[in-house]
Length: 68
Image (cartoon, one colour):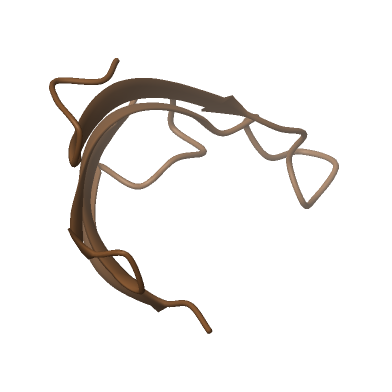
């Protein structure tokens, strides 16, 4: 959801099959915030919460994008 010319927030739902036969399928929900610093650079931060035993309890991350 755009908040302005350079701000975006959103929600994610990620689900996949378990890596091993007897494992639980991972399911997580998360949110992110993206900020365009300039035309050539942006920064994104995110957090997530695991919803199943096959998921991490929580997670967080940050990324930067440089465009040329």
